[in-house]
Amino acid sequence: MRRMTWAAAILLVFSLVLSACGKKDAESVVKELDKVVSNMESYQGTGTMKLHTGQQELTYNVEVSYQKPHYYRIKLTNAEKDITQIVLRNDDGVFVLTPRLNKVFRFQSDWPQNQGQVYLYQTLIQSILTDNSRQFAVDDKSYVFDVMANYNNGTLARQKIWLNKSDYKPVQVQVSDANASVMVQVDFTSFEFGPSFDKTTFETEANMKSSPSSGGTSDQPTIADPDQTDVNGSANGTSEDSKDAVTPDKSTDSKDDSKADGKTDDKATKDDDKNAAAEDEEDADDTAANPQADAATDLQIMVPTNLPEGVVMKDSMDIVFGGLPGVVSRYTGTYDFSLIQTQPKDMAATYSGGTFLDLGFTIGELTGGDDQKTLTWIVDGTELRLTSSTLPETEMIRIAQSVQVDSTK
Image 1: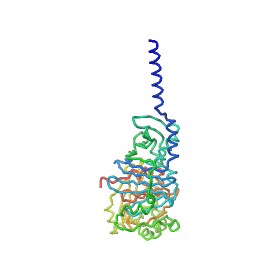
Image 2 (image 1 turned 135 degrees about the horizontal axis):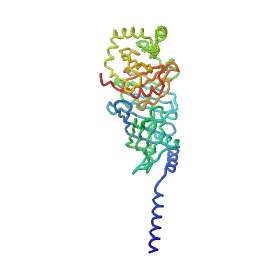
Image 3 (image 1 turned 180 degrees about the vertical axis):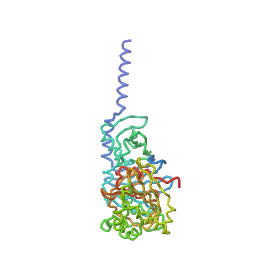
Image 4 (image 1 turned 180 degrees about the horizontal axis):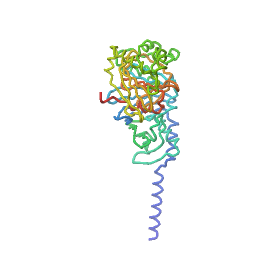
């Protein structure tokens, strides 16, 4: 009897040892993740990204390609409207492509080192490695990490990352705000380590050729050289269009800015965010008489659905901006800002001297100084320009992320 008891005890201890050997704790998993990233030569992943930053959920198809040491290709496609933007990093810089508009922006940036993105494997693993207060759990098929969200967005506080137990491939990511509400969710449908890429995968012109422009032309964009750009960072040849812009805000790139400034200095008020109210009315009258402005009614009007507390829309009017019909909406209250939207035609590439900002669903360009900043981005074929002298950068990002089609129009 005593022998049987000892035998049972030995078997129990042995089974416990085997069970313990089969489990990994957070520290061992973190060490292996560090090795995976250090030895990684390339990867390719696909999935879907859902954004809950506005009143309506937005879904994007995501394709991510990476080749050591610094080649990236990210393709974001609006699942509903089949509109695509591509972010590239290659030896020539960082590029944001909108093939449908034949439009290319080039940035001098060390992205993504200076700001990560939720669908990049390096960003996810780095957030795990650097958060010493990380939380760790295990489910049937995945290791789950709950860590701080280190993104260029003040609303995103934490993120949960699911990694496959067998190979540490990403399965799902959920990024939440301070109230634990999920704002961004990425579900990976496929992920492969070590793929080989064709040399054209990360080339700008090859990616532009892969999708026809909205005009159906075969013209390819010309990448503008920084030395050939004007003080506003626009490629030469665009200034003639800018001359025709009718704007109620100092934020535009019109060559008439000096005139507008002269009028504005005496007429601007705090409520108008240093804009000339009297000149606005005059410009609005001129625009109404301009047949080009009538074409703005073809725009799919977009509005912010997440305004800062104490901010309301002041007015909205049709304008001509950069030779194109558009709409400008002004907001006032706790902060004052204007939002201009147009539908740009096919155009040559432009070099951007601004700051590269990740908006989640696209890349924005932040220009200006301490007195006034402008955030420019393209969504669903519409170019938007958010300008303010009072909005903090985090609020500009929050507003941009919430802009959606006005359901009341």
